[in-house]
Image 1: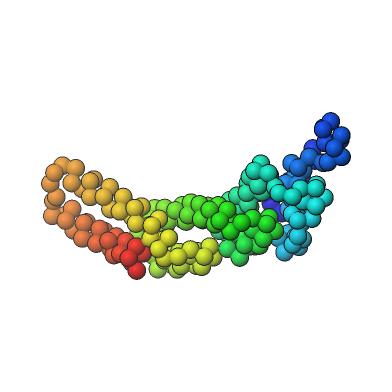
Image 2: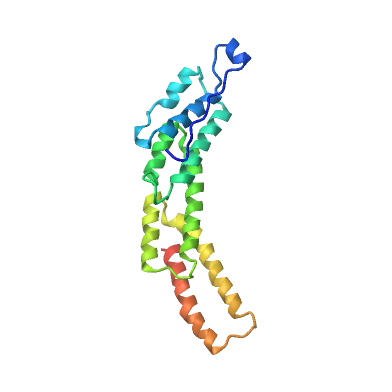
Length: 204
C-alpha cells in the first residue's frame, strides 16, 4: 500500500546481542513493512501487540510511539481525501489507528491537523474564482461527510479565507479613494453574493 516501501531491519548491536534482545526500532519498521505489502482490510489486528511480545517490550518508548505516529501521518497525507484512493475517508483512518494501536488523543490530534489542512486547500480551490457554484457546494458537503468534518470546523476554515477575498476586492476598488457608478454595480454584483456565501458556510 502506498506510500510505504519495505525497509531493512536494523542489525542488533553488541548490547542487543549480549542481552539477546532485538532493537526496538525494528518494531516500527516491521509495521511499515506490513503496510508496504498489504491493503488496509487485510492487516492483522494485533500486530503491534504481537511485535511487543516478540521484542520483549512492556511499554513502547517515546521514539517508537513517534515512529508509529509518523506512519499514521504518512498514511493520512497520502490517502485522506485522495479521489484516487479507496482508503480516503475517516473510516479508513480509524482502521489505521486501530492497527497502529494509537491512543485516541494522539489519533485525533494528527487527524484534525491533516484534515483541516486538506479542507483549507479545498476551500481555496473552490474560492479561486470568488464564487462557489451549486456543484462546488455539493462537493464541499460530500467532502465533509468523507472526512467526518463538522459544520463548525468548516466554518473556522472558511470564514477567514472568504473574508480576506472580500476585503482584498474592496481594497482594489477603493484604492483611489473613490467608487464610481460602475464600481458600485460591481460591488453589488460580486460582494453581496460573496457575503451570502460567507453567511451560508460560516453561520449555518
